[in-house]
Image (cartoon, rainbow, N blue to C red; front, top):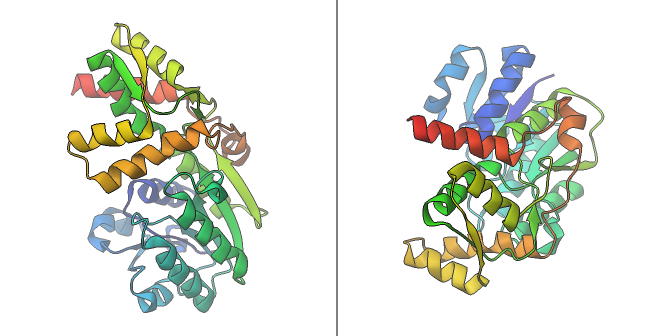
Length: 289
């Protein structure tokens, strides 16, 4: 069985690639990227590194030759990626791929998070295709909260528009391990898995964690979405990016990101890492460096 990973030079893709190389014959691992030079070390280990570009469908068909299962890691451009993903799905069909895994988001049908519509469109494209599919609906990356906690420690304030909403933050490593497990196992066709951390974390818990790790009180300051966007823009974030970021606490407020599942442990045999462990370890590394 030959498996392929799109976006294999990205942070998630590289993690999945390394797990696959440890579990499969390297000749059965195909890594797809626009920047083949970034994966030279994996090529030396025996992986087939092939150039592929979502905007060049013909390159995708050639790159997927001989592949049985593909992990389609969602592209970054929210405005273009639904079309890019459709091109990848059509190329997979043309190349004879049998099963596609896709990295989605919890509750994509809600539309609240800015990323949701393109995820929903991709899920529907896979449902409408002749391919077997599995959706890995990854929650928000826990690693993104390292900077949030560090800023809260420095300022003594955790500024958020999440209200009472909760988020089941999950580590990239656990997302990668779950994806690799499904790629090498059978029996996951037609399934959608919420890939989450072990706990749903609210603003007060996050402030408490910052207090604990920083050794000084951190208070929660609740603001609305427009205020959050304005603050990010004032700090130099482009407005369209700020609105994307602000859509996630809005989704948390609506209860769309707070469900905790056992999928990581079910798929990998190992419990997911907690937000506390991830943030504490990354902050310690930052201090030491």
